[in-house]
Image 1: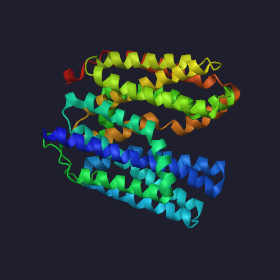
Image 2: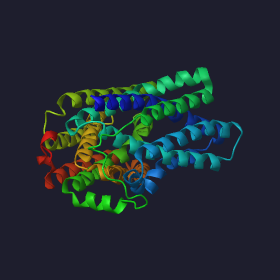
Image 3: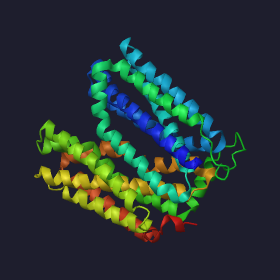
Image 4: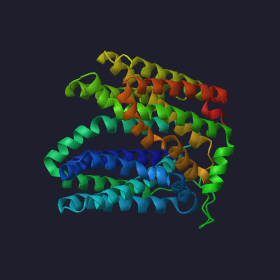
Length: 398
C-alpha cells in the first residue's frame, strides 16, 4: 500500500509541475520575440532547449546510479525554481540575449536531470506488473497537460502577466520538491550505489548493448522517431502554406490530435496488460504508418486530421510500451544510465531531422510524409527481425 501511495504522490506532483511548465512553454517564446523580433533568435531558442539532451543525455543518468537519487533530484528542482524566477527579470531589465539563451540552456539541462530522475522514481514506486498502468497514467497526464495547458496558461498570463506565470511555474516545482523529499525507495529495489565517484556510465552502456531486447527496441524506436521528427516540425507549415487552412482550423487540428492522445492512453490502460507486448509493438507501428499514409491526401483537411489523430493515438501507446519494457528489463543499479541513454539515442537525431524537414518540404510537401512511412515500415521490420514481436506479457518477463 505504501508504494501505491508514493506512486500517487509522484503522479500528482508530475501533474502539478507539468501544468506549471505550460506557463514557461507558453510565455518564453513570446517574451523572446518581443525582445528580438528575430526568426534566428527563435531558432536558437529551440536549439538551446534541445541541446542539453544531445550533449549530456549519455552521462546524466549515471549520476543517479552513483550518488543519492533523492539529493540529485532535489538539487535539480531547486535550480529550476531559481532559474525560472530569474528569466523574466533578465528580460525585464534588458539583459543581453546571449545571457538569456545560456540561462535557458542551463534550465534545459536541469529539466533533463529532473525528467530522468522522475522516470526512475515512478518506476521504483510500483511492482513490475504495475508498470503498464503507471506508464499509461503518466502518458495520460502528459496528454491532458498538452491539451488544456496552453489555454490555461493564456488565461492566467492575461490576468497575472508574465512574471506571475513564472512564479506559478516556480511554485509547481516546489510542489514536486515537497513530494520528492518524502520519497523512500523500497529496499528491494534500491540497488547498490555505494561506489561514489566511480560513474557507472560505461557499465550501464555495456549492459544496454548486451541486452538483445533493449538494444533492438532502441534501434526500432530510433528509426520510427526519425519519421516523427521529420513530420512534426512541418505540421503547421503544411496546414497553413500547402493546404491554406485557416488559423481556427489549425487550432481544431491540434485539439483533435490531443484528444486522440488522451483516448490512446485510456485504451492503453484498458488493454495494455491484456495483450502481448510484441503484438502491441507491431500493431501500433502499423497503425501509425497508416496514419501517416492517410495524411498523404493533402487536398483533404478531414483525411489529414484523421490521419494525424491516428498517429497521435498510436504514439502515446508506443511511448508507454517503450517505458514499460525499458524499466521492466533494467536492474535498479543501471536504471539512471539506461533511462538517459535510451531516451537520448531515440531523440538525438531530432534537431538534424527538423532542419532537414524544411529542405525536404521545399522540394515537395509529400516527401516528409513518405519518409515517415518508410521509417515506420523499417521500424516494424526491425521489430520482427529482432524477435521483439515475440515478447510476452509483462508478468512473464524474467
